[in-house]
Length: 133
Image (cartoon, rainbow, N blue to C red; front, side, top):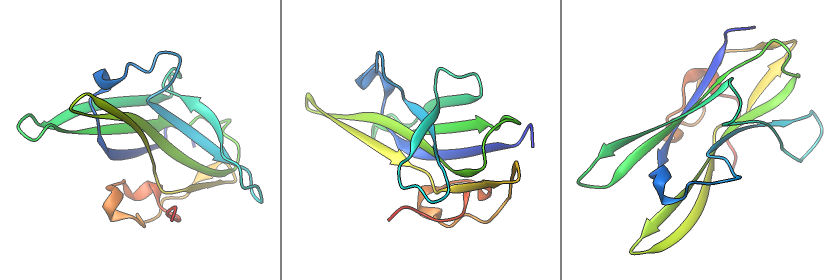
């Protein structure tokens, strides 16, 4: 339903490590039932998807990235996942990485709330269904 939101928080990297020009920090991917390929349907240029970064420790150099998707009425049924893309920098060496939330299923235009299946990803209970291996 309109107004439903899904949210995932990931261990992050400073966005200044790579400004990702012509790329994205966050995305929503969709997979049709019976298909194996994920397709990007939203990225951080969309108004309905919000990417937030915050430093959690200046001493340790740690941070978090949060991705929030405000689900539109017209989102198609199927499985969705939130994606986060960042770049780890250590002594001048840059290494890109990506994280994915648990899959979420949208049926009959309603996202069913379920418990989180992956507490190690620290996702909110609305995101659960299955975790990627």
